Amino acid sequence: MFESLELSALLISIIAGLFLGVPSGPALFFVLDTCLKESKTAALKVYGGLMGSKLLYIALALLANDFISSHQKLETIFYLIASCLLMLWGIVIIIKSNKSNEKKRDFAEGSFYRNGFIVGLSNPIIPFVYLTFLQFIKIYANDVTTLKYILNIAIMETVSFLVLAAAAGILLSGGRMVQNHWNTMVRLMGIFLFCAGSYQVYHLIDLKKGGDIDLKSNENVLEEQLENIEEKSGEQPPKE
Image 1 (tube, helix red, strand yellow):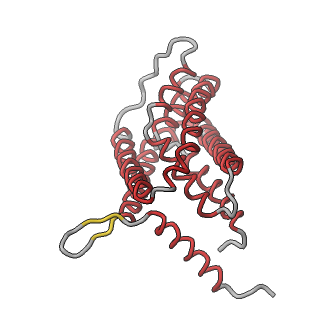
Image 2 (spheres, one colour):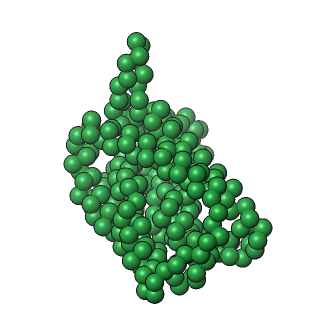
Image 3 (cartoon, one colour):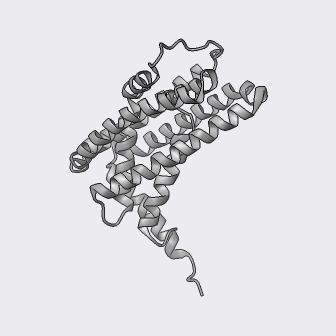
């Protein structure tokens, strides 16, 4: 598929940033809602608080990455929990999309950064997102170092911010028509997250005869995906 594994790791960072930038989670919806109902400056303060909590989780993810990778069973359980949380996240978003968003948030002056930090810190999905991302980079990159992990995270976060800013710009300039269909868009994002989590759970659970349930090795799942990519790349005719 790609001639270089380094290019694959770069594209994974960009794609992850695209998905994370779409306001499909409570933290990013918090930023976008503040932008729509307060101001762009207030939204930037909330995003700054969110990034503060993300930096803490990034540091913890880097420390935990090697430990998790050296314990295959723990790694598989970690991915299963993350996938189930992704499904739960989607359900919560779908439920919230049916509620009215007309009420304006009441913030004390100067509390935007603090509230962004608290929302980010209380989001159980964020540490799993970074740990999952680091595992994929480990599989697709040739030579992984802490600096390379940080570089790919920086690329992912930059793309994520640009996508979120673009989404806010579209909503602000789209008038009532876009805002009237916002809950429908939110609902579709929740459905997508639920389906993505369900798909991952399906690949991690091994249903055996007799009704027994076992967990597949997550490392084997990722390696099979990489082998499929390399096989498809090898099947392509050489360029003349």
